[in-house]
Image: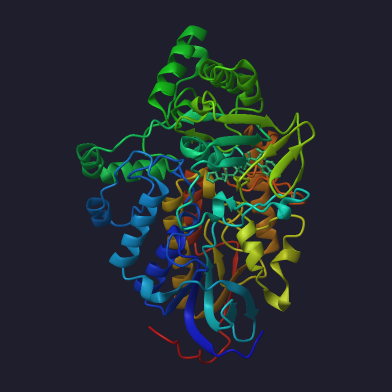
Length: 547
Ligand code: NA7
């Protein structure tokens, strides 16, 4: 590490998205600590700072549920405008939160943390930033984002392409015009499916390069009437309680068993839920869509039929029809995705039939065809969940690097703590519910646990909290066993790490959010079994820079 001047804090928070903002707030105002936040972006927002591609929207139960729940005043005062919030609305909301709780002054933006090293004698972390500065702190909270490290394909010649290349997960902040342009889009996950209809509205031509056909359910986004929002506010305590009890989902999920209905009745139910939009078809049709293969295939068949109904050209419809088990990749909520293929200016290339072979300065080539293009949009996703922690690559006890510890498998305890990396906490880390739960609420609950752990440590005069490899192995077994009860692991997806060449194959999320959060609350209440506390070593800590 360099000889840069060093500032000292009680805690450092990395990331200014939902999780990081709330972590800073609680550690600063709840624990009275001096806290410094860092983010490589130019402002608050985290994922929402970077994912500003056209059409970007929340793909979970949205307004007002995709927002903080800790402050009723905040719920009362923020007027969400649509049922599926757009990325710009979420960003405005987070800017409002940052101002309302005076969080900006404690963050350094445009400042990426490039390294973090634990000193076992001092019981402190030292972090180094891309600006050449250094800071130390007793605690580091990594709110580094589950969808942060962009996955960029390395097709032969891609760097020879002379037109603009935009990754959806690193979208420019200046407006991007598609007017009159021939645009290639690679990737049809949520980002591609959301962006393609918007790009097609003004581009001269859009050629979509699809590796896997996807299920997408109609989002049926619409303006959120103030009366509707007010009804949610009036009912807020119950709705929040419902989210806590039901895996982050604010409404009752179905208890209906498929075999109690005839095939015709089931079909009618699917139609109703399709018309309703959102993820209802998955969670409100029948119990077990993600565990019962027969039911899953039936729901999948229903969506396949819908695609064939919507897309007029039968060959295009065939290519767009997914084969994998319904819902085992992230379910996509779309706004006119399949309809877009009925436009004259949209062409679909199936990469399974015609793989991309190379790029030239002005074209994309497949084995069969060459496509002249003016712009390339990469909607190719992320090195999800573990990628941002590995990019940080902290060094724990004895200088062990996380990249070595995680070379073949991502071990954690509770998805928040890593053995050999004391006083370092992750929000939405691997093996926590993360992306399978409503993320703002999940982040709040992680922060509450971290706050309780630090409080416990302070009250007992401990200097460090760590976990053990035994606890990690037990946690790994539990997360795996739960995942194996579902159909998720049967499909290659970013949930299993399969989208990144060479990444360890492992189901990256805890599948039962409510059970998980009850469990971590109980662990905190029981004095943190599975964790090891070390007495404070340093007689005195460096004076914090700010308080
Ligand atoms: P996703 O869901 O990972 O989608 C990425 C898409 O890009 C998907 O269709 C991939 O096909 C495709 N892909 C990835 N690499 C390549 C290469 N090398 N060549 C061709 N196609 C490729 O990322 P998103 O950004 O759409 O969504 C991520 C999450 O953000 C989403 O779930 C929401 O929660 C928000 P594949 O299916 O792997 O065959």
